[in-house]
Length: 99
Image (tube, rainbow, N blue to C red; front, side, top):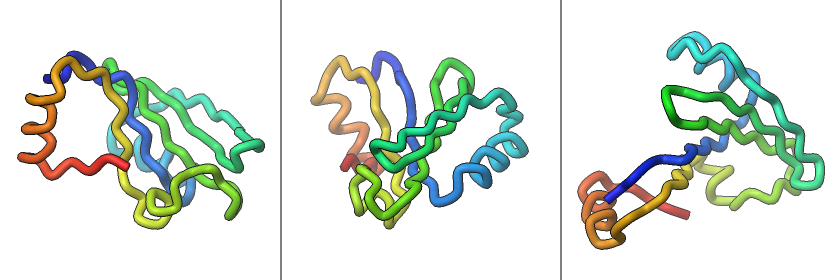
């Protein structure tokens, strides 16, 4: 059973386009941009309701993100979990994939 979602990270190809999408679609207007040159990535961070949203964009082919995550732009959900058994049932019923 989930007790809370700490943050949700989305790997995106274009950080500015993704921020514009969230600004327009969900009225998320306050973004912090973080450059991580040592990881070859740029991140946009914002609060949406009580969850921190991270938009993660590789800035080079050397990005330290999982290749399958970058190629398929899969969502990576990081959460605090109270019970793996009920969580696994929930994941299976909703076809959640973790990398």
